[in-house]
Amino acid sequence: MRRIVLEGRGNFEEWRKAARAFAAAGILPDDIDWQEKSSEPGFAFQRDALPPDPAPNARPMSVPPAFMALAEAVICHSDPGRFSLLYSLLWRLLENRNLLDLASDEEVSRARLMQKSVHRDAHKMTAFVRFKEVAAPVGGRRKFIAWFEPDHYIVARKAPFFQRRFTDMDWLIATPKGSAAWVGERLTTSDAPCEKPDISDATDDLWRTYYASIFNPARLKVKAMQAEMPKKYWKNLPEADLIPGLIADAEAKVLAMAEREATMPLAYHNRIREAAARMPAPKRAPAGTLEALREEAAACSRCPLHERATQTVFGEGPVDAGIMFVGEQPGDQEDLAGRPFIGPAGTVFDEAIAQAGIDRSRLYVTNAVKHFKYEPRGKRRIHQKPNLGEVQHCRWWLKLELDLIRPRLVVAMGATAFYALTGEKQKLADVRGRAIAMQEGRSLFVTVHPSYLLRIPDEKRKAQELARFRQEMSLIKGLAA
Ligand code: URA
Image (cartoon, rainbow, N blue to C red):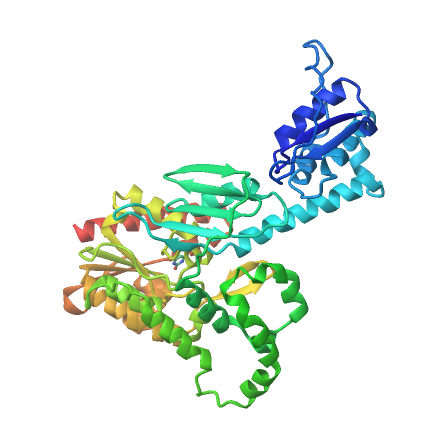
């Protein structure tokens, strides 16, 4: 019997080196006693030396990639039997490459359960790590510490996730199973167990306020909640001490909610308000500026379209733009990006103005309606034309944009934009392609909407209409000169 003692703290390379040497020397699984180094001071297992490295001309050992993925997870498990289990699987895989497909195999199924448990633990770490800010040198990067108690040796495995998420601050995640730190743009991990630091602070109150405010007693599903947030994580979550009380009161609260008048604010509104009052006020753009208007429009609820749209898509461009282009409403991509004309219609528009020598960065581009109206169909959101009422509600913003930008030339792309700008319903063909006088010495030029060009099924007609649209862009350039 050979005895090998490993640190075993999720370090796959350490196990792999030993396993390769044993397998190459033909040592059977039952002839190896795999031990994990004890963390008890003064305690050390007697260990045997590894077999010598295989000869350079020895046949290389090959295992399926699925085993590597499995072994890299299982090695993080805290079960002391993981090393021998993996070695036994490795040994058997050398005989049967398809071994991992045998779900009924006792060792395969044990390893799969361990892999699942490690993945779950890693997922919980991403969900339940709570950083607390600690004092940092003046002018230096902000510093944060978190304490977490994983079941397995997953800290090094998950450290890159936190590195990607929190690059612009220094942090340390301490756990009884090792630690990870990102300091001055350098990631380090350590196996050494940490002591729990004392890091309760004012942010705990914010977490509690937040948690209490999002807790909806009417939606309480205790079992699902316990599965997602097992009790063992509770003690390190500032909000956890609220949970038993919130659960106990849930039924009474639901009844009270049902009875409460709609106008009465819920109790947690006050807590949110108090927490918000403790936060520094966000910087506001000076009143009367385009930025202030954009901020105001971001909270627009003048019509129901805001309820389903991702965000307000406000106009974009310099405040001294000479030309303002007005479309209909943002499309799917504009709704997600928060910018007008950046989707397929925007591509048609960009190409046409570029050919006419118009620089988009000198234009103000906006829409008659600032929220995306759509019909969900499966996973897609299908554009729906805004109705007259919606256009009328949104004219409020268009008028304010016109008052601030004061463009010499306004271009209506399509009938909705024409109606929003003039309040008149006209056949587009009757007003298209020429300058019309507007108030305040402004001119209005009417053309089609770029989406209309995309929808023309006949290729020849499409090319003709596109050419006409481009010519109109050249006319617009001339009018604005
Ligand atoms: N169609 C529009 O009218 N506006 C956009 O911003 C995009 C598509």
